[in-house]
Amino acid sequence: MRQFVTYLRVSTKTQGINGLGILAQSDAVRSYVEKTSGEIIGQFSETESGAKDDRVQLAAALAMCRKTKATLLVARLDRLSRDAAFLICLQKSQVEFRCVDMPECDRFTVSLFAILAQREREIIAERTRLALQAAKKRGVRLGAVDPVRQVQLMNQGSRRAKIEFRQKLLPIIDEIKRTGAVTLQSIATCLNRRGIKTRTGKEFWPGTVSSILA
Image (tube, rainbow, N blue to C red; front, side, top):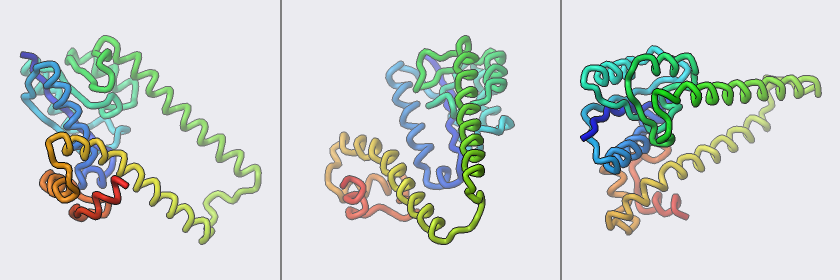
């Protein structure tokens, strides 16, 4: 039986508090382990920026892998880092690892995926810089306070947050439905028992579930 040590990471304190990001990753790695008839012997998680490479829990997970010869398992490659140098360093650590979203990625091919991921991040940053330069040339006052525009941006941000929350929650609700809990009340009860909170940090009620499913 293959042994795994799982590492889960979220980037923001909000994700860490409501547990949604961690829960989704946990479900993904558990499903992978079950499909491979493996065994989880250690679980590590933390709330930390992917730009920081001095992560205590990741170091502990790697140490356990080296000690037990277990495989490090993450839900997504970017949960480790998007920094190519860091991932290449991980490759040299001789720790076997797998990514649920990239089953073909292992310690022998991670450098390639890492370089592509870092290049993607650099392209996004460059596009943002050029867009700001173009806006400045058009006379846009960057950083200028416009109350109406600020309200519009806040409303847009709120709508995006609702959509993102719904997208993350729907797979969990689908999983709950497959267990036989199909009523709004039973779904709300299961979500509360799992410790998942609404976007505003409250417990779920049938009406809350209904609005998400609508």
